[in-house]
Each structure stands twice: as C-alpha cells, then as structure tokens.
View 1 (cartoon, rainbow, N blue to C red):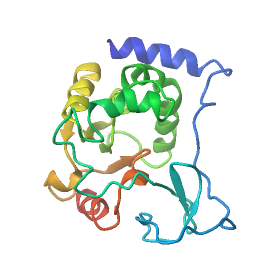
View 2: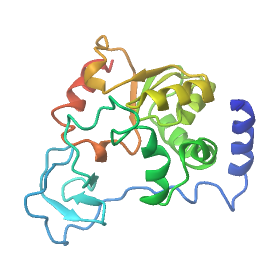
View 3: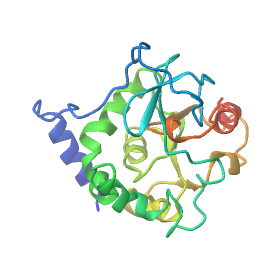
Length: 220
C-alpha cells in the first residue's frame, strides 16, 4: 500500500464537501443532569469518579466531559503479551471491531481514516504546534496519522500494544513504532514536543496514576 497514493485519495475526498470530516465525532461536555453511576470501577483521567451513563459501553465524566470505557480492564489486562488471546490483540482490530462496534477492520480503516479523522486531527494539532516537532502518538492503530504527520514535516513516532499492529503500521506506512505500554518504554526526559492520544484516554483504567506521569516526563 503506497502512502502517497492513499494521501492523494484522502486529499481529494477532503476537497469534496459531501465527504469532508462529516463523520468525525467531536467530544463535547455532556450535561451533568444524568444519573451518577454508583461505585464505578474506574475514574476519569482528571481523577473524578463522579461518572454518568453515556451509552452501553461508556460513562461520561461530570467534571470534564471525557468518555470513560466500561470495559473494566485493569492495568495488567491492557498490555498485549499474546496477540491471539489478549483483549487488544489482533482480533480486537478485526472481529471485535465488526461484531461489537460495527466498524471496519484495521486494514479498511487504514484508508478510510485519512480523509476524515486524520486530517481533522492534523488541523487541530497545527493550531497548537507547527512542524518540525518531535511527536508521539499513543494508540496509533494502523499508523495513518503518524504517516500523515511525517509527511507534514513532524518527526513522528507511534506506539501500540499489539506486536501484530506494530508490524502492520510499519509495513503499511513505513513509520517508526514503539511496542508496549508507555510505562514500559523508559523514554528519556523531554523526548517529545507533542504527545497525542486520540480515542485512548477513555480506554485506560487509571491514566492519572499510570500513563500521565510517564507522559509528563517525556514532554519538553
């Protein structure tokens, strides 16, 4: 799969107003008049545990509006040691996406995400930081956004939990990828100017005390 060919198709779709970023879901603060869930098994990244029901799969933080997954995975269940059986292993990106989320698989999304989600994220990032900048994306999935960032002039790297997904991203977009949780990377301090988490924080069981402290030390 040639990245430049995919990117050209994405840009062509983006120029078509009937496509654009219409399918991008922008998180907005949810009204706090909903019923507070009693004793949720997790808290928001802002350390607030007052969460209200949002959908069958998510709660919403009454403080900042962030969605919080109800999957219930603990810190020891999130890493992928066995790609064939662990939750975020290979099948999460195929059968789970199709059967539980109604989404295309990772191979299809590698193409579909570029004209909508990835370009939307790029426009958002450019309002905060211009290239060149050392950028790390946690939960980079197929790697399309990292590839787009590198083509835009950023020094971008991705990170994923599944060895299979890491290999897929490297082969598909020819990008540098890290494997495993951020806590296990032992990155030097001030390694990056930007750290991106798109649709990631809501999946972490305790980001305030696990992922976020490690992210802070790597930011310049």
